[in-house]
Length: 125
Image (tube, rainbow, N blue to C red):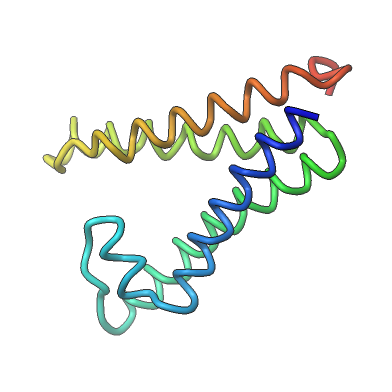
């Protein structure tokens, strides 16, 4: 039951963040330390961030519902990739090092990987 709860909580957190990008994108952007862009940039910003958060939510929630380590690991991979590419943007492109966001992504991915490891057959998927 614990893996379902953990995966579900991560999924709900990501779902709420994704819905925030649809309902109040200016606040959602501000919560991530950025302004809401204009024109095509706004379309890209809202579309891509909403897709990111809703995808992670969907993978996590579906995995929790079906007790599927495969789906939960998929969500963890997306979060870990975000942390990796944030770090790369700092190393290569002079972006600010996003410590709180990277920590959150790594911790949430760790929670998901822990949950995935607790289902029977978790390594066979």
